[in-house]
Image (cartoon, rainbow, N blue to C red; front, side, top):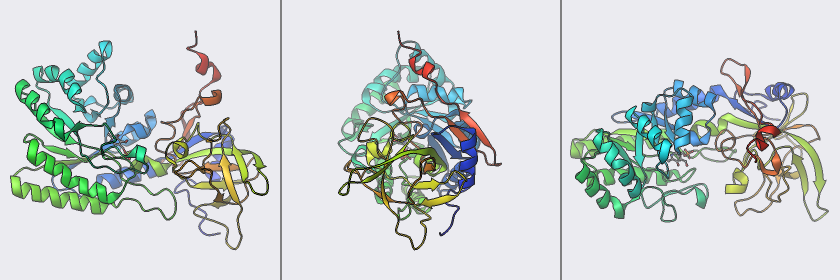
Length: 435
Ligand SMILES: Cc1ncc(COP(=O)(O)O)c(C=O)c1O
C-alpha cells in the first residue's frame, strides 16, 4: 500500500479513537487543515488589499465560525438567521455581510436595522430589496453593496451555477439603471459590487468573471471601492481532480485591478468569499458498515452504512463524488481512494445509506444512477469514512429523514485533542415542537 496517512493531520488511528468516544455517524473536522486553508486564502495575490469572507453556509457551527474568525476572515451570511448565528458566535456585525433572497419583516426587521447600524454590510440582491432597505440606509448614511447578475456562471452541476440566465441571484444588467436611478434619488452609494458565479465550476470562467466585474464597475458604479468576486473556487476532493489555482487567479485579479487603476485612478480592494475552499477537505464523516447485500450475478454488491443521504446529501443533490476510507476496528487503513492496496484487484462496491430511498447512495453518478467504486471489501463493523465532507454536509442535509437524529460534530484541534463541538440531536428534540 502506498502512503497510509491520506487524511492530512487525522489518521486512521484517530478515527478509531474517535469511535471509542462517539457513536457513529459523526462529523470530524481537522482544525489544522482549516487554519491552513484560511492562511492560503489570505495569501492570495492582490493589488490594493484583499478581504476574505467565509461563506458560512458551507458550515455554520459555532466553533468552526470562531476558528475562522480568529484566523482573520470575515463572514458572508446567506440568510438573516445565518447573520444572527454569526453574531451569537461572537463575530462583530461589522465583519458580517448579508447576501440573501429576502429582507426580514416585523421584529426581525428591527434586528436587521440594529445590525446595519452596528456595521453589518447589506448586499442588495434585487431591486425590491433595494426599495425595502433604501430609505433606512439613506436616512442613516449607510452605504450598500450590490450583487449583480453577471449573465455567465459555472458550477460543479447545473444546479450549482448561480451566474447564468437559469439562476435568479443578483440584480440583472437590465435592472441596473433602475437601481442607479433609485440610489441617485435617495442619495445612496454602492461602495461594493459583488457577484458569485457558482460553486465548484470551471476556474477559467472564474477568471473571466474578474473582467466582467471590472467592466460593470467601470460602466455603472463610480462609488465602488471594493470588488467582490464571490466564492466558488473549485476544490479537489478525489485524486485526479484539479483544484482552482488561487495563486494564478489572484495574480490575474491583481494585474487587472492594477490596469483598472492605471486607466481610472481608482484603487479597488478585492474580496473573495470561499466556503468550499476553506472547509471541504477539512471534514470527514465517520460511519460504520452495518450490512452487505447483493442484487445477484448481473447486479451489484452493496454495503450499507449507518449514515448516508442524511449526513451527506451532495451525491444525491449534485452527483458529487467523495473519497472513501475503509478503516478496521483496530484503526488500520484498509483502503482509500488515495491508498489502494498494491497488486490486488479490489471489488467494485455500491455504497448505500440506511434510509428507505434508492437514492440514498454515496456512489451516484451525475445522472443520478447507481455506480460502483473499488475498495477493500468493507467488513461489518469497520469504520467507513467519507472524506471531502467539511462543506455543505452537516450544514445541508435532510437529517431528520426517517427520523434519524442529526449527527454530532467533533473537532480534532490544532494541538491534537478530540473535542465535541455539537452534540447529537435526541429523539425528544425531533418531536419537541409537535402539537
Ligand atoms: C453568495 C455566495 N458566496 C459564496 C458562496 C460559497 O461558494 P463556495 O462554497 O463554492 O466557495 C456561495 C455558495 O453558494 C454563495 O452563494
